[in-house]
Length: 135
Image (spheres, rainbow, N blue to C red):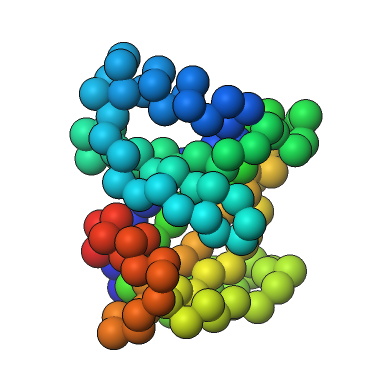
């Protein structure tokens, strides 16, 4: 089983200001720009790292602009099974969107994690996300 920290997902009160900042200061490149779950999502790359932005202000004042860390795996079922064997309890089962499977989990200090696997051979309008895969 392969695992890779794929992205940090942040809220952006002003998406264009955020994108311009990272492009101008660090040479960020836009990898994708599309609507997912009713919100514009823009993923940028800074070197080999990625940040994914929601085009909306933070929803939770305690968490601030950080929504979650995205951790990619090539076998979500195996990863979930491994975590359960170590005593981790998930609130929900794995969600299958066709082009990807994912489950949310809470790490220590209330860090929200998105554990996901891109499905090989599946096609959808969200195929652009597969192009960001590191596995």
